[in-house]
Image 1 (cartoon, helix red, strand yellow):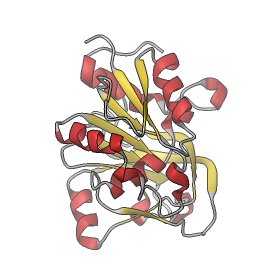
Image 2: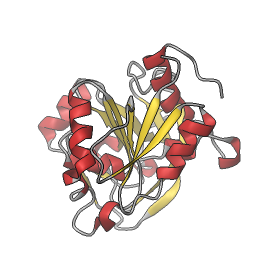
Image 3: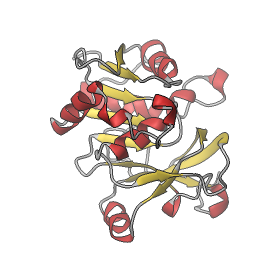
Length: 238
């Protein structure tokens, strides 16, 4: 396998689908396919991307309707077979609604939409999504959401922390965990988690918006590059 095929799911209301497609297709030179929400064919995708946006308008609850779409039935089967899935922003919300990740994404503590760059600390570099980083490395990429406040009960929070499932945490530029660095009030400053099996990642910040110098950061490359290296053994040319 020399190239991966990324399947980028498109829901009514997705608005970061083309960003994700551009990131993997044109920046990293991989194969990419759009997957319409009514489809039930993953078109041979090795990795599924659930992009950011406002699927189905988020009128009921973020991700609550998307989880019942035809394509999500196949995405769940793909994940259960060990296939890799990455949910970004609205995609993270959909993954929790679908039961592929624990917890829920609540309204931001400020009750305001937040759109700005944040600093993330890589908490676990021994995953398919983070092998291009080192543990403790700080990256800077944007967030843009109104409901990114990760919440779970105490027992689940302890389980995911103890199991190394917290992958990214909001920090200050020097890597220090502080409430001032937390854009939404998420528990333990959590910005991204993986499932226990390690093949499903959800994160509120947008790595696909940190892929080129013109965007002000290339720190997001590592997330996709980690997947490519893990699944093909090749280091992508950037």
